[in-house]
Amino acid sequence: MKRYVLTLDLKDDPILIKEYDAWHQRVSSEIKESIKDSGVESMIIYRLGNRLCMLMDVIDDFTFEKKAKLDAANPKVQEWENLMLKYQQPTRESSEEGKWQIMEEIFDLNKRTNG
Image (cartoon, rainbow, N blue to C red):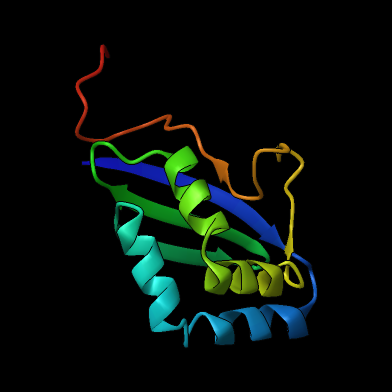
């Protein structure tokens, strides 16, 4: 199993942030099913202010390209993604490939290091 950690910013508006949180308390079963069908075993999103951090544990052959193709073919996912655009804004590190950006691992307590 692989783990990815991604980040994204929300628009810095307390009302929009509250709405975003509320949407994530009632994610539809269709959206959850599409996430699992793409090979995501676990997904957790944390928020501090307007900064989001998503942890994803995925199956070994998971790819973001495969997930993007599945998402593009799913009208419910497209509806959800369009709704989320109201709340999300790219980070300064964002690229054209997606809103969520993969974070680089810089420390793991359990990995052996020299030092």
